[in-house]
Length: 78
Image (cartoon, rainbow, N blue to C red; front, side):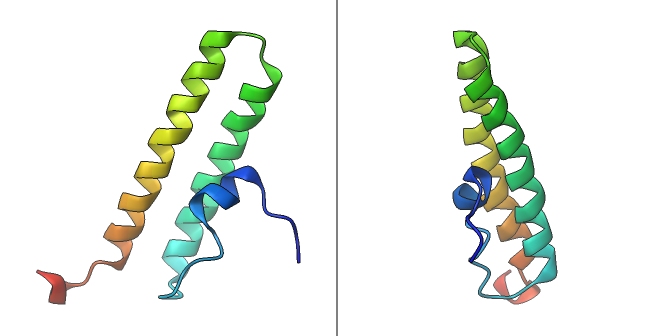
């Protein structure tokens, strides 16, 4: 089994019990952005850039969870 990236671990790309393609795509894209920011955070010497990357990663985790909720919400829930 392929090792997951940091972003893939954070958004838990392997967890998709509804097996919706839209959820998989969403998680994949957000994981890629998290990986990009994590790479920058690891390479930069700037404490402020590191801080900003950490905030952005945290916000992306929240956005991913809300996105999945939106994608899995059905009219029967209203």
